[in-house]
Image (cartoon, rainbow, N blue to C red; front, side, top):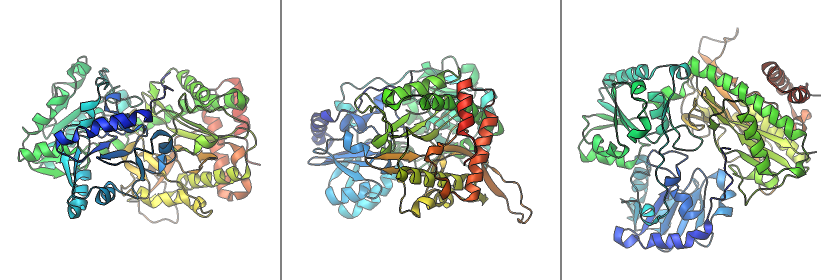
Length: 598
């Protein structure tokens, strides 16, 4: 069993821990300390040794940060966590701030004018620090790099992970590491840059065709890399993790300890390419050695996002395999009396169906399984304390995924446990209409996710409703389930390109009642020309996910003819693609679930 249900939030420990932290301020010559969620690689998910935000505050979400001053403290969360945070954070110690509506700079300007705020330069990005510095100059608030004050008081801090790294062969990667390095090195030479700094763990894994296990659910190892313009790579990682990979890495990849990275930066010839989303410390090392910096996005980010033919074929295969497990699960769930199950029971059973494929390497994130009001917590993670028993009439939201050697999956289905209330049916139908609108989108080259985001929201907007998260995120190839730079969101300006994989997941959440989300993964492809169209390149989406929607939650009268036709066609494709892959019981269930809408 990959998922654990242990209660990890300890808000009862916040008071003594915050007091211990404040006791460090005088020696560090600061008046406060910033506690991000991230690690030195700016990972969204972090190893236990880097769980500083949850340790000090109790908040376990994957995005957020805290600021602790001498007399007050705040936890900042976005729309995904505005319900969850109140159950995990002691409101007597921490003010909850809705971010980004109120930025760090706004809050500090109001509450910390003239003060010195310490921060770990490895945990905040250059972009974050520079923007905050500029915004705070008028109130004379200074951000001061300093040693990590949480680590200084955290006597129970776990050791760094030591999981071995394995090769990810060309059979699955579709391109050799040598070819990737040669292509990117040519880009460096053409732009007259001597090297590129790579701090994102998934970029290092992608470049070298390796995978790790340092962070649960994410097949990455904690590693930095420097790509030189002659295609050599300096890899900074615990050498024991790659002891068996010397032949795979080859002579052009040198290995040094993880903590040798900073000193190595100061030995580089410039100019050096660096992403502003890398740690502030990286820029500090380079500038202190007077090495010219060229700021540009992570050199691996876009090539990694644009999957090659082998990776797309792997994604298709992984999704069909995963769909079989999901249909077995849904058929099982439909045959159970809800009152006999808890949320934990559901999570365990779903994981067992994925394990039964024989190919599951890991789950791609902790399964979100929220019944009734828990479904309204966007990134709800059930534990032994929050575990809710299902009830007839509940709306159950299940967001889950698997890591397979040929692909990463992510799917959400919302299920009615008995006759659903009319308002849930209407909301679910609107969410489904938004998902269909994105699925059917046809758009010219150069269009970004921001241009498509409104398609998913329009049916909800017409009813005065919306959701407080993006419509879609990029997805890796046996890598992180959340991958950039592409997204479908209001703020995403990255042009969508063929080969990019994204989620398509509008939702609706009624606090205290239910949550609805419907999610498929889609990939951008070149659209066939239309007879009446002009010569401009056009793109559309191929759907990768093949699992039926709960027809009990669809109001057919609300659907346009093309929407109804799309659902029927999609359900027909599911039956075809899963033919011969299911148990007799699941096959019988699927035939009913995919019958034409009446």
